[in-house]
Structure formats: structure tokens, C-alpha cells
Image 1 (cartoon, rainbow, N blue to C red):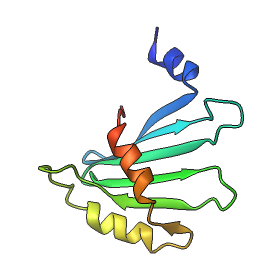
Image 2 (image 1 turned 180 degrees about the horizontal axis):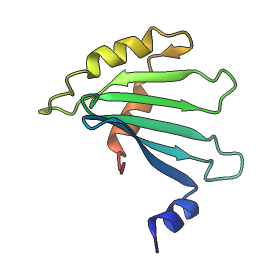
Image 3 (image 1 turned 135 degrees about the vertical axis):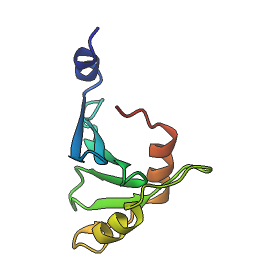
Image 4 (image 1 turned 30 degrees about the horizontal axis):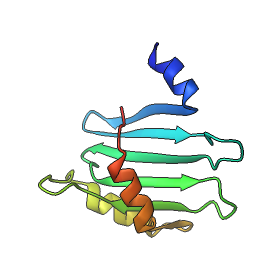
Length: 111
């Protein structure tokens, strides 16, 4: 089964946004897997922005969360901290809740 068929069965869309040769973002959009399920997305920075996590869902307030996460023993991208801060101060952006970040970090399986 191709990854496209697998993604359709799992109600997912995966793609990569390449900003430059040293900076990219991998994204997963998950549509509700069950009837009435809440669509949501996760975007993870790579390269210079590795450590930036952006998330959101289809709740009524449409807030977008941004966090900084680097696994223990790893080093973030050179621009990640500055990018996380710049996004967080934009109107409508906030810090993602800790439990959402923990769920994302434990289930990461991006591109």
C-alpha cells in the first residue's frame, strides 16, 4: 500500500514546507478519525528551526499553539528559539498546553 493510500485510510495529510536548504517544516493534518472527531495539525521545524512545534485544531477559538521542544541530549536548530519566541508574541498564538505537547512528543512519526 502506498503512503498516500495509508494516509487516506488514517485520514491524514502529510507534507513538508521547505523554507531554505537548511530550514524546513514537516506537517501532519489529522481529520477526525471518528465521527465528530476534532481535526488538528502538528508542524515540526527541521534544520535551523529544529525544536519549534506548532499545533492547532478546529475548536471554535482557532488558537494556534507554539512551543519549543528538544529531546534530552539533543541540540536545537540555531534559529529555533528565536522563531518560537517570534511566533508566540503574534496575536492569536499562544503556548500549547503541556499535555498536548507531551502527547505529540510521545507519538512523533513525521516524514
